[in-house]
Image 1 (tube, rainbow, N blue to C red):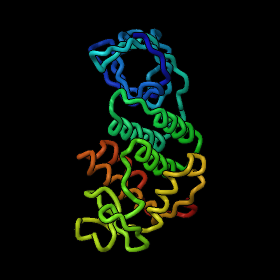
Image 2 (image 1 turned 180 degrees about the horizontal axis):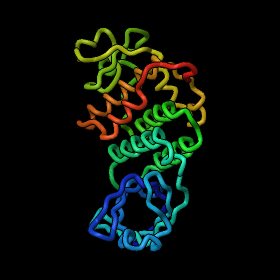
Image 3 (image 1 turned 90 degrees about the vertical axis):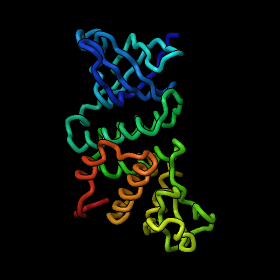
Image 4 (image 1 turned 120 degrees about the vertical axis):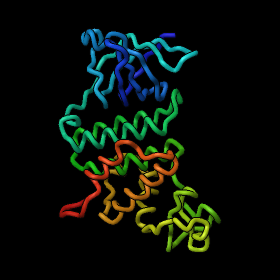
Length: 256
């Protein structure tokens, strides 16, 4: 069956001498894999360079006995060149592309995820607040994908936590002081950090962009979100090492 959709390139790899396989996140079909025959031998065959982060319009033959579909047409809609030309923006984009590729199943439509990814790429291309955009994206993608940690109350006893909160990656959320013994490896967390996460979850993307994030909360967001992902994915993201080296650094003047 012939299908048409808009899609962002998450990952590509070569197949034989002339073709490529690409992983896309699409508007209508979620994450899909496509085979582009002959694209390396004749670049003019497709009106795209198939760069990571690029937004393309696909026409493909959808196979129902295979998760690899044949792409017959792929036309570039938006290239986001300023992301590729800036090392920090490129690292941020690659981290978020890998995050989507890791947590989203194949062919499970989620238009919110597609819209979030396009919003993130457009703002990453235009704005300089790269770290902030990453944190917003992390929180939002975990929330709308159903992968989010439990932060509204104690994950064990469901009691509302007013102070002395701890975060348990093993249990999947906050634990109160009475239940902290359930996970001796849980870590203390500022209430401002959990409040920031909840605010971002409930806000629109534009509203969340206006949120101020102190360096202390940034540190905890970086630690909690990435350790949570590593624990539940049972492996660190490949881009995490480069991301952490670039963005997890000492405070400077004029921080958000």
